[in-house]
Image 1 (cartoon, helix red, strand yellow):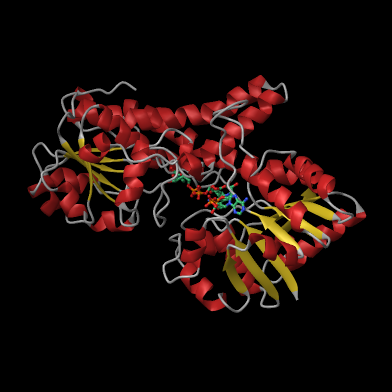
Image 2 (image 1 turned 90 degrees about the vertical axis):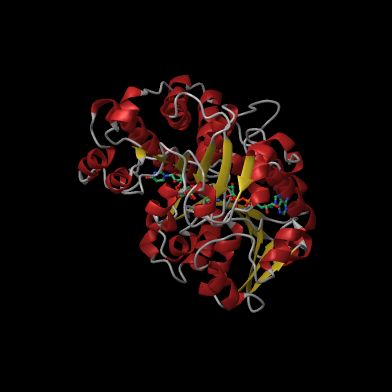
Length: 480
Ligand code: NAD
Ligand code: UGA
């Protein structure tokens, strides 16, 4: 029986390994982590992450060929294939701070593999890493090994949160990069045979190591670039009376462009787009390519612009001040169908409104009060460095209340900001909400999910990203 061990039981390690276990009953899969609370949760009825379909997959295999454990060394020792799926945050200090990837977690995992191994192993980079990381990992492993042979493969993950199980069951492609030596090619084939249990062969792409590593950063940069492109257009739509949804549809029907990932929004969030683009920018700078670095930096700048543009629109519309006004925030997660708040645009929007002394009442169906208070008190990039977790700030706590119902959040509010596209927000009783709000009542739709015309008929003043503006908003222009 082949044994797989995955170091890192997070958003990638957990779901990916659960699906491998489900699709490959002949393989024993152990997912290990240094976080006791995470492993305890994986072994309980309440999994540590919310992901549609995940409970079902875990229930089918846990205890049979899928195990979650904190005994990292034992499972690494026993494994034939070791996936490394630890976090690779942005560095907050030292050389490359604010841009470069912090490989501390990765390096300590590699050193541990070298220390405990007594048999040859395939080590798979599952985390997103800077191109050429495999070379550094190889050095750590080779330097420490006692005649043991390691083959390093790059097998980046392309799943998106909220659709992770669907993406893993039916991936557009699986990418495996390896050394172009006989041993390297053999290792690539071994990993390919794992995925071949359920992924059609033509969708399993094999490349050299550096292409696989770089393709992951490139794919995220291209995806984020589409969002920044459509968001940049949304600003121009508002200035000219064009409608971004009509423009995006017209642009996306060109088969060379395609319709996906063209939804204008309050900005992209999530743990990876910003981190990976900053990392790409840093790699370009280190390789003497400042023009290329500048090009990709712009994707982040437009994303920041979109978030501050949204805040300015809210404040400007409400007579240039939200001081002591109650603003309801509907949705805090970075997208629907996840409880993940890492780099969610809601953090920047809420902090912007708090900067103007607003009182916030926040509702998200999947995010806890503790998480929200923590997110609003944290410094940039600290969320991915558990050691830097800060206590919640008492001032933030006072100005922010977290409630478990959209109607409660909007009661007596002056304005509503929709920041996550949860389906349940589309079917709210806006007539009832309007009656319980201060007047004039505002809706700022950062996800273009409400029927703006219907809301205007009720009496709301409505702002939808990239759509023709109400007369009210035209009279109160916002400057980003
Ligand atoms: P995560 O923070 O949810 O999980 C990482 C886990 O690794 C944590 O539970 C942490 O405790 C554990 N860990 C860190 N160092 C360890 C060590 N030395 N030994 C054992 N466990 C250790 O992160 P994630 O979202 O799963 O992302 C992991 C990697 O995958 C990142 O590089 C990310 O860029 C990439 N990625 C993420 C996604 C996503 O949707 N979240 C998608 C594709 C790729
Ligand atoms: C993204 C990629 O889609 C995955 O392929 C990749 O594996 C992953 O990053 C990663 O490397 O972590 P994820 O961040 O989970 O996945 O979610 P996305 O669906 O890409 O959404 C990212 C952000 O963009 C969200 O805030 C979302 O609301 C926003 N978005 C997305 C838009 O604003 N408009 C769109 O049209 C699409």
